[in-house]
Image 1 (tube, rainbow, N blue to C red):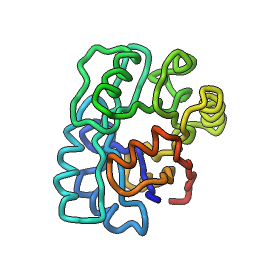
Image 2: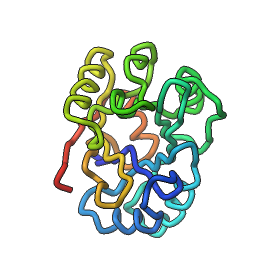
Image 3: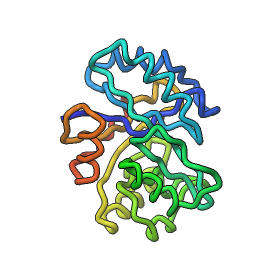
Length: 199
């Protein structure tokens, strides 16, 4: 079993205060959260810096990710160091991920203007964020119902933009701590979303 925060931003997103060193230090100090996906907006730069610093610690795993902005809303890709081309449609993002053995997660489906909303029903993503601490309880409930309706794996995330938010939501995944195992387990629905608002 591994505990993973699948949606974390660094200063390279432009709206986050989390430096790569601060993130690695926080993971090193954390009692059980040792795996995160760095999912900055439209860039892999944060991932490269965080993963380089994390090599000093055998128990920390940094997953490559990106929050891709499409013409309909955001989609998170995890599992490839390639950045998708822009402009891009949701369908193209999912195809891009699948072609590279990566996964595509719909983040905060009903939260903001950059969320996919009902358009998500037209897509075939890998999983749905059913808990995002920056969404309202009602928006998270709608996301949960969407995941159930589409029969998709459910994940919880922190969507951290400052270090205090790290781990407010995370996902228990029935897998070993390797990217390949984690991605396979998510695809197979071996996930359990965990809400941890006191973190």
